[in-house]
Image (spheres, rainbow, N blue to C red):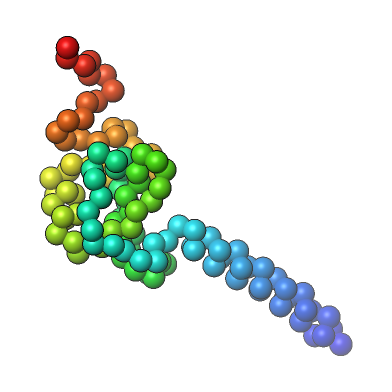
Length: 113
């Protein structure tokens, strides 16, 4: 009798935990990665997504518009960009300097006239 009382409670608790866990990963994982280039002047920073918790490995580019673009980590262009440090790795979802490289200024640099 006691078993019949505990079974529905345990089942509901299990389903609640399962739903909470799966909904969290869907919103933070790339499900597909693209190979085509993204203009670097639109990128703030990047993060590396490793397969395991998420279904695929990807480089996630955070754009100025607040969107996340998923890029194939085996693409030659993204390897070159990361090796040359043209964009910075995101730190806790934010970046200290937006973009490094040609045509971009740091916050404390003045515009030459």
